[in-house]
Length: 588
Image 1 (cartoon, rainbow, N blue to C red):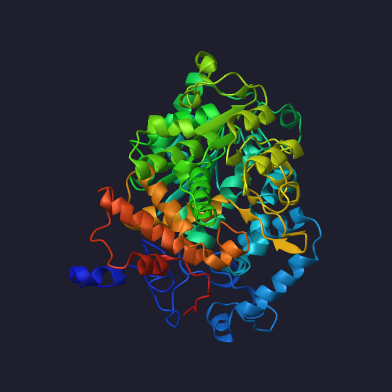
Image 2: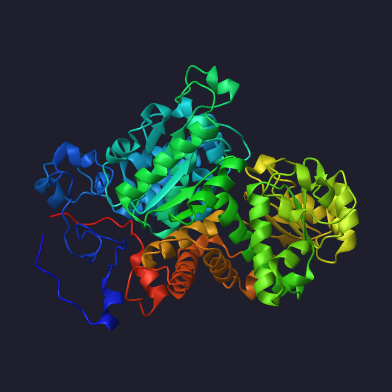
């Protein structure tokens, strides 16, 4: 495939590791070519004719030129018109907008992804604010619930208990070898919807499409995986269309051994630097897996760490509006699971770094309410291990309104997964105690949000600074338009992943998450603050991701955990140049 490359001096290496098309580890030179250079559509051999049109990586539909149609035996297999990619994009968007049911849009987009990969990603990148709620929350939740019914073509890799002892062989069945990011779920806690078993595959598929669209990771380097250890969902067990194992969930040692085999096989097959993102595992397994493998693998849990990082970014940004430091606040959480305790821990770490106080001391600024009430020291012996650091000295309090009145928090954060739990009484109490109450209703999907944007602004008479996990429309109140911020993990994980990959990170550390939070908060401008936003708009998400990736990579190098040496001179430019481009290529 070419002669031995010339060795470049160190200062020039950074600008030659990727081309305009982006992508890291570009085996075939496809993306290191400039846009006007010709590339070869490699499959096992050169794709042509019918097989070329059926390969989503290289299919361009009606955008194949007359010259390409002649060269690749496509003449007559397509109508005579030749369209540009931009015209194709307008046509698909026009068709999508005709659907009134979001799930129909989701199915149409998944069909497009299976048919024409580059057009799918161009559509997603150019229309991110409109399509993000379709490919991810809230629509992906409904898609997972109905995955068995809408299932058409397999996406990703399914590893079930039937493959115990041969997981490595299953991984080798996946056609792509240069995998850089794996998103894996066991489907036990999908969004706020509970155990969806094997049908949770919609989550890894959706997350990885965003890794590509928002973070520029090449699609062929992404691998969605569902670990099927059964389901405890009776409705699915009795559903004739359910696509997974019809048995109760494996637990305990059987589960641990199966997951260990999986993690070892991943490392053996893809190497030390493959990023494994745990997604939507139940609380007990999520914490155990992260703790067990964080020192031996490059692992990241988006529910614990990604949510924490994006929420911390919003809190850092909000301080510019409130004129306070983080250490001046009192935080109250409704929900003490993965998200709640993950956010709380990162806030405590940030305050500790700012003030120099030990983290055991900074945790005392943060209070959590679970299903049994305020977490206090008298409950400590009965608490799960991840809740115990948040058990502070206080009289028992049974409910949220009691906790708000007793603790008088300045920040109220909902991670409960239960809708409408921030009642009018609770929100009005926050408004009574604070001139500008900061209220984050983070549970997904929209139906599970603790309160709506309209409720938050109305009940606080327009004084709330509000953020949510799922999107809400702008709210009109007393003649003013309020733009709700969305504390969406999509701000963080694509840029974090790109930063880890481009630095060749071998481990994930909390300091990298702090760097990502600070980088995101820095993207919020005075204009955004004036509109009530504590997060930047998604419209320039790739620029945001590049800045986050650069900060994460810089921290990785500083911690001595990077293996891609030498370090690029300009990490932001390197991040931008590393991003996958969905623009069609010209074929020989």
